[in-house]
Amino acid sequence: MTVFPMRRSLAMLAATGLVLGAIAVPALAQSRDPAYAAARAAGQVGEKLDGYLGYVTPPAPALRAVVEDINIKRKAVYAEKAQANKATVEEYALTSGCLLIAQTKPGEKYQAPDGSWQTRGAGAPLRDSRCP
Amino acid sequence: MRKVELTRSANPATNRAMGKNGFQLRPRHLLALPLMGALALGGCISVKAPDKPIVIELNINIKQEVVYRLAQDANATIESNPDIF
Image (cartoon, rainbow over all chains, first blue to last red; front, side, top):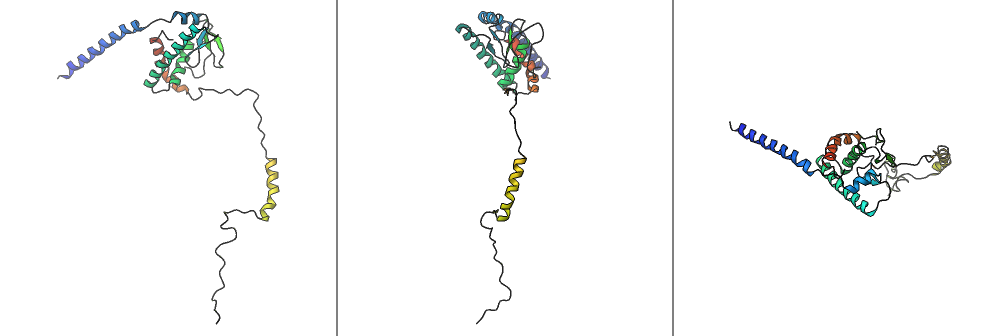
């Protein structure tokens, strides 16, 4: 039977891919832009309901450029993943917004279901009723 | 010479109302108008504006089940893109 060697080589390929992937992901993973990290910690920007960053206070032009860039990148990622999951960009973005608000650290800002900006406390954030 | 009619002449195949598109107001019908008007006035439904402002939920068409279905994948996406989240 020639099936088994073939199957084994496929398994080897898959294993190699997994190992390569595991190496590649930390290499690709970069931390936040310092300007974004600082603005987030200072409560100048917050996580919106729709999965994008919003301004809590009017931003300086430099910060605005950084945040706009992040939102464009987020939208590109949402669009790609939404298509892979047969969902709309808005659906995927809202789902991500749910999770991002849940992941905010105490002191960071997030948007409550009524649209107001809230500061994350020690407890659970106020989230949309559809959030998982 | 005189024609002999075996039967009486038939009624015309059309009546007055035909050829004028159905319903016609006749004096009889006109008599009923004041009554219908009174019924309409008596049965008036009044609609009051709500006290609270109307909030338009933009994402109302997104279903909870869709959010639940996407949650796991979205979580993986966030974890693999720490620079933009």
